[in-house]
Image (tube, rainbow, N blue to C red):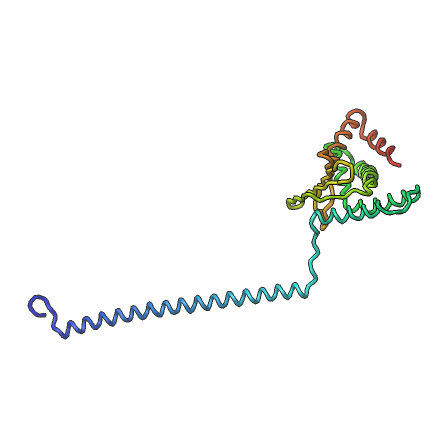
Length: 245
């Protein structure tokens, strides 16, 4: 070294050359790393895109080849289908002789029964008394209740020969739903009937009717509780049987 600690010119140039070389290698390494990152990112995107396309094509192929999975229609759709069938029957232009009325009632029962979950309605209408009954008593009560309720609904619907049914609202919460309707006619105040339903397999079935804010199930339960408290369950069943034709 020269006085003052300076390096000879050649040594300084060599040292600076080495530093430049190291910096160039570092820059080149960073550039290569960036290129690799870009290439890998592009490759990953291409792979993901290819997978997405393959999955989409397979899904589309399944939709085209496999039969469509059957599902329940929406609650309003199913209630409307039943009500439309009922109205078609009661609006028949045929004369209403006794045999024809009996035939019409039988047709109404045939349409109504599949839409209503009468066993569930019977259970709810009996309330806490349901669990106090034997399986045989429960079966008997379901049979009597079903006949009574089916007949009562059929008798009421038979008078709707000229009214229109409006579907005003639908609400659904998982396996439960409610369909609100209004029956409107000439010179008559509208009648609100709300159908409470629950999902049974792929069908929406009625487990309660709310007519002008009065629950049919709750109304029956109050009546049944009074009869059982005053008399007995056997007396209730006997009274219900007497109301059957």
